[in-house]
Image (cartoon, rainbow, N blue to C red; front, side, top):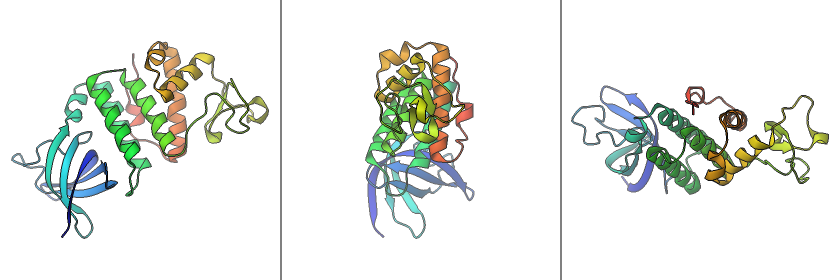
Amino acid sequence: MPTYRDEAVVLRTHKLGEADRIVTMLSRQHGKIRAVAKGVRRTASRFGSRLEPMMVADVQCYVGRSLDIVQQAESVGAYGAEIADDYAAYTAGSAMVETADRVTDDSGSLQQYLLLVGALRSLSRREHHPSLTLDSYLLRCLSIAGWAPSFDACAVTGAPGPHTVFVAQLGGVVADEVAPPGSPRLDADTLGLLGALLEGRWPDAEAAGERTRAQASGIVAAYTQFHLERTLRSLPHVDRTA
């Protein structure tokens, strides 16, 4: 049977039998991979912890009938172990890999792969607060998937901003004349933070106050779950404390 080799980040795992696991990975070149790692739950497994969620590995697999089989796995980025040492980072990372699993299919996306690996690397290095890293990742992930939010021009008419009414169903901020009744309004600080997270302006993002961050996180969560059309199970557990 044909074999292939690729770099992949582990999104989730499921137990199979007494010692095996089904591993779902987002790869650089082969899209999303579902493969069986035989004996991985044994203490003497040759895979060790290299096939745990949030780990990046160089894997060799061969194509099976329904699931591929992992033959080799070498660690490329042991981000999972470092992220797990901090609860805020771990909950943020869990939300990231769950989102990546939802937005990608078997065809995959190199942009989504690189974005996820970069975000996990940033979490493991404690470059920014985990909550900010997560919100930035979610906004960029949705943008790559085709749901880029607008935080300046009206998402409906294209009228230049600033606008203060935010409607997730319409794609971002909208002008008053097209805003549905009762839509929430955002202050300038929150809109500024959302724009900074989307564009990666980290000095501006880190200067935001706790109240502004909390409001922005709520907007990002609502926008993400609306476009994914389902609730992210890990998102309510994210530690947002400063």
